[in-house]
Structures are given as structure tokens and as C-alpha cells.
Image 1 (cartoon, rainbow, N blue to C red):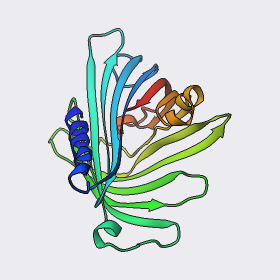
Image 2: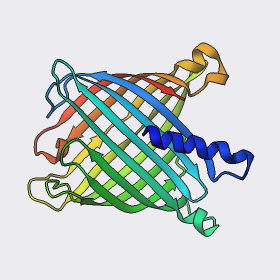
Image 3: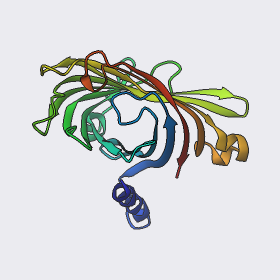
Length: 247
């Protein structure tokens, strides 16, 4: 993740010599602490999440990596995803808008972490303009496991969204994703639904004014996971307190 962030910073810095392909980019760090997590060495855990997102001449990207400490044990874990999308509208130089759909993309995701979780996802993504949403994306994937012990093959829908709600002199931001495995290819792996929104207050803007908007957030992350990891009957329903800082 540090290498990715450094590479993006170097690309952005070349604009003095040539037009940069990077249209915008962001990096952030989040600390989360919560309890009642299932299928873990400890029900209480603290997580450091590093994220980057942005857009370039041929599409956009999102990537994150979690470093998880299971409180009260010596156990830890890690997990991350890299999700580039290649915009058909940008690559063809055409406006593909039709109704609420503003663009279509080739959507890819690579999942990796501690244990047999390595997978490659590929499919189609759509950007949509919907009332009340700052942005809304819908990605449809085919899941293919990379290692033999991973049985999470199937089909997945992933909406990604953000809503900004004015509260006083700042905003309440509700953003996140839903990973919905709608069909599983392997016995022993169940269809599952992971709903993971964050509800955050823009504390940076509230304390330091508009110049610090979208820098420092505090709030909670809600985590609902039906059939967690594809395990039948394991339904996680919990939340974490979070502090998030955008670099």
C-alpha cells in the first residue's frame, strides 16, 4: 500500500514536465475498534485500514489494506483488495450516458490476505446518477479463486455509494459498499451478503473551517454479514468506532 501511494504521488508530481494522466487521487488512514466479530480469535478487534482512490485518463481505482489486531490474543490478520476499473467512455472518447447510467467500465478486483482468500474478480461496472447520492456505482463480477483451498467461486454484485447530509456547519457522510455473492459455485460455500457502511461527521471542517473539509472524520462503521465467509448460519451484526484521516 505504501508503494502504491508513493507511486501515485510521484505521478502527480510530474505535472510540471508533462500533463499527468492522474485526474484526482486521495489516500486515507482509518483506525477502527469494535466487538462481537464472529469467526475470529477474539470477538474484540482493532483495525488499521489504509486506502487510496482516484481517477485517471482511462478509468479509476480503489484499494485498501486492513491490519487487524485481535485484542487479548497474540493473533493478527491482514486483508486487502485492489479494484481498478477501465472506463469504456474514457477509452472510446464517447459519452455513454443513458438514463441514470453515466458510464460503463471493465471492473476488476484482486483479493488477498492471510489464509486461503486469494481471488480474482472480473466483470462490468456502471456509474449512475441517483437522487440524494453524491456518487453511486454498481459492479457485477465473476469470482474465481486463485488458490486451491479457496472455495469462494461464484457471482457477486457490489454497489458502492456516498451520501452527504448537511449537519450544522459541516456534513454527515454515509458511504460504503455491499458485497452480495448471489450465486456460489462450490459446495460448502454459501451465498452471502456483506453490508458495510460508515457514518462519519466531518470534524475537520467543523473545527477548522472549509479549508479542512473531508480531512478528519469521526463516527461508526456498521458491519452486517449474512453467512460470513460463506459459512452457513454465521450472521455477524456489529459496529466499530472509527477515526479517519485523509492525507
